[in-house]
Image 1: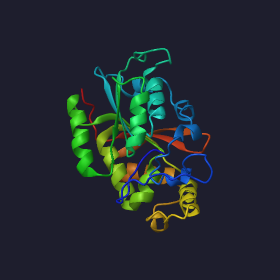
Image 2: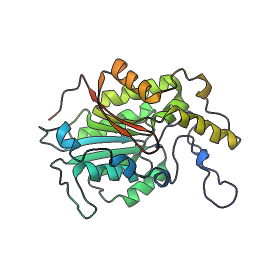
Image 3: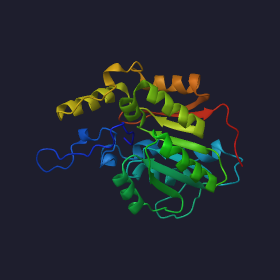
Image 4: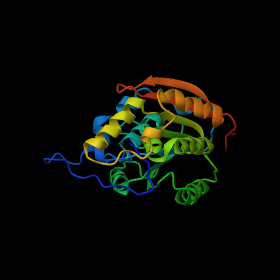
Length: 267
């Protein structure tokens, strides 16, 4: 993925045998150092219509605010930004009629450092190291960002291959709290839940490395069809409705767009 922290803090990725770099299984919060090589951004953004922001916010006159949770080193964040505001690689200003300010956070400060160094749109995209499950750090940070724009919430949130890492590290209660948080923060929410087979694969990778299993893995009551479970939680417990499914990526992950049923557009 892209983030989540357990109470013990971030684990460093050890080197595997040989000289191939960090062992992928050693990223227990989804903080893989080369994530975009395995799941290229094009696999997601190609499923989204380019005029999405215009269709979701036809009357907005101010710049839109977006939140990307678990951004890794930023490749997907940048690709989403370019795609949604209608930028081609050679462009420098939005062409889709909608400006977007995007706040991207990840638990891994090294990944954030890389994202900041390589970002082609520093005025529009902000990268920050943040454990989204740490309310003491999260609340003042997000409030400060929103206040810069005179806002109390985000127009759209992105949660791309993050739910599993929150779930494995924080359990069923953590997943429920996480989804409720995003629903309270965002008018629209685009979620890409990992399927259950990814949970089993992540647990196998840790065991293969001789690590302790994920603390909550064997006690998770929310399991099976995770796209269905995430949809049920957001629609039945978090005052959101499913607007559209944009299909599945080539690695079998659904892209689901939700809308708050209680939010009133700001501005």
